[in-house]
Image 1 (cartoon, rainbow, N blue to C red):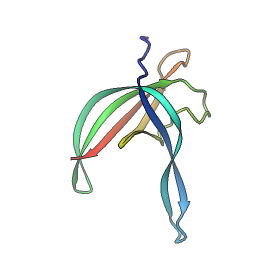
Image 2: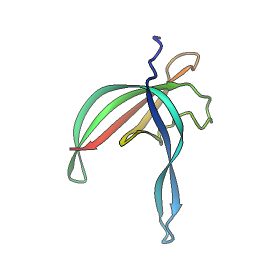
Image 3: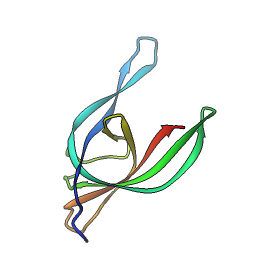
Image 4: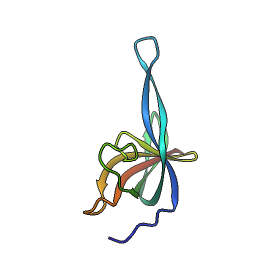
Length: 112
């Protein structure tokens, strides 16, 4: 495996649910920390979401490896943020046999 070029600073975020007092909840995002990553664009498409066109770009994001259970290890229910850009994580896999790097398959969505 070629060593990835980790040149993008991303914030790893996890959803936090808080009771709203009416039997439901409000979901907010809590920053878990900053990671350096290599972001590579994949295929993009336009989808309809709530009747509005949305551009969805697939991305492959490589970060340094972290052990299972570590707060810095990304999970599919989390997301990365780079300023206003948000990358929703769909899947996570080891990039190499030694676990030095982790590949996250994510989608960046933006309103058209």
